[in-house]
Image (cartoon, rainbow, N blue to C red; front, side):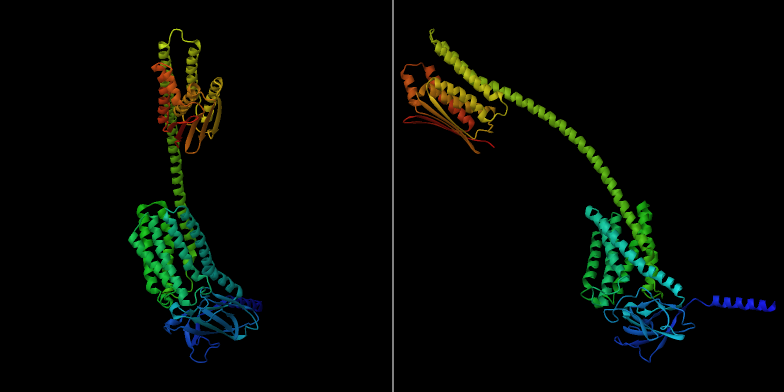
Length: 617
């Protein structure tokens, strides 16, 4: 029984001893020695003890080049695979375990590879792993201006170190990639918003801020200096991108508060542009001396964010408060990252990426909320504008209808008045002349003469009716009835008539001008019928785009001779005026009203009446 209890106690103690033995050992002591850039092996002498994590500027200030780190540990059981985790190597490194190279960056000299931000993990087993003492050599290439050094080394359980490695990669790299991707997407989205609403520059400045922020964030995810030829130029570009991000971010906050400070903004924009322009010009100053302008930029962004937070608390607007919370979180986290950057704190992890995606999404939500609110206001304005336009359109339509009705009534009244005037001046004049002729005529006036007088009155009345009864009738439609009546009249006197009509279709002279033209033509044909003793008459009416030409040519004795013959025949003065002078005067008066050139030419064989009238546009 005693033996059994002793065995159980020994087993329990063994289990406790196994449980107490750590699964992972973190080594924070090493030896270091400086070496040449192109050295493939470390020097034999000059090794000094260092504490990990080590930043070699603390014991070799201003040194740029290669430092070898040597770590030794005892391995109890080399048959079991172990994990090997290197927490930090800045900037480029080569790793050797027991003389064998197990990892090497692409470029260990300028331009240096940039795998500084992620740990290195290896699964090690025999024959690389030895029973007893094992030696790890790490060649680190770095530049003094960018905090070169080497972090702790962890050795032990492979699964535990794999989990630690995955966690570190997630925090240091994956979150940075996520931050980079979200930043690009959100910046592009609000850049498109700005393109759609150029007047709202808030979105444009946020897009620029996000763009330069992603450029700055690429420092944590890229593993080379491409497209820049040196580390100095790369670091100058990253620093200039940070300055541009700070400037555009501060202007974005101003725009979000509906504020404009033109002079200060111009100065800030010039500073950001100058920083970007100087990158390829003086990279060997812009990179190593970046703190000269980065630290003022950092202080400025603190002041800008704190000022906005105070503004949001003062105005208590919901979107202001949400945006203030979005800028407050990275502001708090940045104190840790600033301490790491300035080497006030020895750490290998920057915490800004932990909450940065949430911050970006929060700011994106605020801007989307602002955009949606703006769109609602625009839609409300459009609805109100639509109602106003509809009301104005309805009012305008009513006014136009009333105006159209008034114009139509005025036009009809004008047409009636013109018809009355035409009847008075034209047909009324003919009627008065006929009455006067009948009063002076002998009691035994031939019946044929009375019928002729009445026929002339009828033809004149028909002319008035033809020219006024048809609304918007073209000249061709108006000439056809006159041609028909004139042809019948001329045939009764055995006078052949020939008509040439060109381009009259679609020509609308208006009621008054059409009536004047037709009466002038009728008067000319009546004179041919009464006085010319002609056997043939040619009538020409031609229209071009600019003018209308009318010509009446007969082969008779001529108007002047006819009038002379009439006078020698002993006709009364009233007959002379009505048949000769009055007809000529009437034609000239009508031509003058038409604004036409008018002339009468008597040739050897007949008379030619010409009229050339311009057409108004």
